[in-house]
Image (cartoon, rainbow, N blue to C red):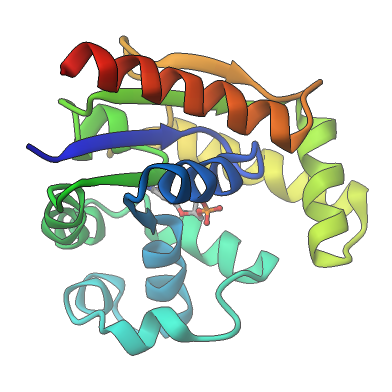
Length: 197
Ligand code: DC
């Protein structure tokens, strides 16, 4: 049976880095689900149609990691028809053998409510803004304003709002190095895998 790891949390908390490392460590597939919403946002036109017609080439665009794409993604992600159009793809991805790690906002709550491991990654917003500013070569104050705007929109929307699943383990990476955060997630996955037999 496949083994699903759901990693959710606000923007720039470290989800992607942790998800990639966990997938590599266990030989699992990895999907950064934020890229799907970013691709819909930058595609333009009707967002629901863009989501329904998303192609692998749309996910290869070089501009998906920009702050602008993040803002566009957060806007289209509030549209229920967009989320619905992306659900089947994400669930199929999650069911792959021997396992899959998906990172996003609603993986543990909506996409994979039966995931074997659910981790909700947080960090204080100054820390998140500083990390993202360093990554994108942007101004930390501007990044902080953008992250707060995105978190507020992602958390306040009616469709699959950002929140931890009841059975998620909260991982606060504020005072952790990347290696420490990855080690904590790997330990949790190892423990659950051993328990699952
Ligand atoms: O993880 P990210 O920063 O690439 O996500 C960009 C936006 O996409 C985020 O602000 C909200 C939305 N998103 C979502 O609603 N659900 C997901 N599973 C992933 C991302």
